[in-house]
Length: 301
Ligand code: SAM
Image (cartoon, helix red, strand yellow):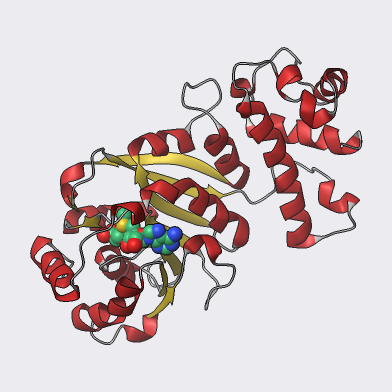
């Protein structure tokens, strides 16, 4: 049969042998259901054996073992040193001979700017309280990540995949779609975890855009090129997005007046970008936010 995955008995045994009580603040809810792991790995659509997969928060290794069966290599970044230290032993025990196929990085994913290998994909059951910042940090820091599948709180999954005009469309939706095409790929119940979280989880699949959403020109204006220019352009767009949603119910003219320097200048930028100044941010897609940021650059903001 297929290689074994961790079930309730194995998870309990591992946690006990390590003396680990799951830490709520670190979002430590471990998957105890092999079918859920198979579902996540299948939804990640990895090219069998070919990809280097970045996993954030491997925990006791539930998903890591599933990824080792589907990836060429796994780079696992874990903030809890007890779990990071145990992971190679767990791999050795449940996937003997796979030790070469994994690197364990004992670190906060938010602080990671370099990895031992270039990741092709991100597949993770993300720690819930930092899921969005971690996802955006990794997409911004590692342009090689071409696609991925993350498990997050179900309502966060809805927000990440939301389109303009939806009630839950907001900053995470726009920022995620700056990087990638984002879709929801399913809901996962609470009973597949130990300990069970309060609310359901959602699967989010993403495929990175091949081309930038728009030519912003902010990096170029600073004489930069390549990834550095891309980062400056992204920051220019994200600044507009943050300002637009900080005052969600205001018109864009009002919401962007501090950013532009005045209401009149905000209006001029919006008009130049082809956006009605009376519109609200929740109606704009990422292309329109990019147009506003680009118009801001052209007008010297
Ligand atoms: N992947 C495992 C699974 O599916 O059973 C565990 C997932 S659990 C929801 C989240 C994991 O992320 C925990 O192991 C936790 O220690 C780790 N974690 C929390 N914050 C982190 C951070 N900032 N960077 C890296 N790992 C983190």
